[in-house]
Amino acid sequence: MSIIENAVADFRQKITNTPLSIEVPEWKTTIYYKRSWSLKAQEPVNRLTDQGKRSEAIVKALIVRALDEDGNKMFQNSDMTELMSKVDPDVISRIMIEMNKDEVDLEEAEKN
Image: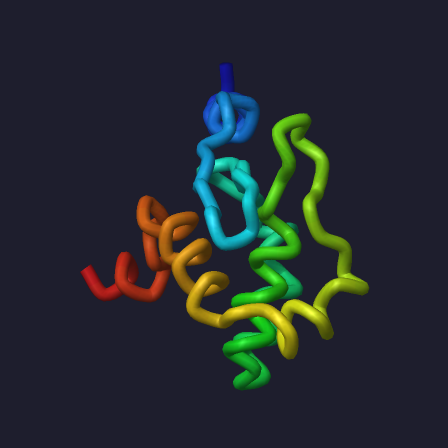
């Protein structure tokens, strides 16, 4: 196998593994998510971050990553306004911290 085939196989294995989960008692639900997510999936989140829209980026990441037990997206882009204005930000922050706890910060990695 070539290096690119190995890299693709590695990532495929990571995104097809059993999803991780977070219990969210306030919402009476469990959110599932994949440990890894593609750079393409991260683009809208990164775009908002680059624009200085940190809160919107956090909510967008939730929309992109949150799955139900069947692997379907829990939220749609149209849910952004309600998530931004009518949902407890502390709960969203806790969910996103949990989702991101195993991820490598690329900026930090580049410094090392």
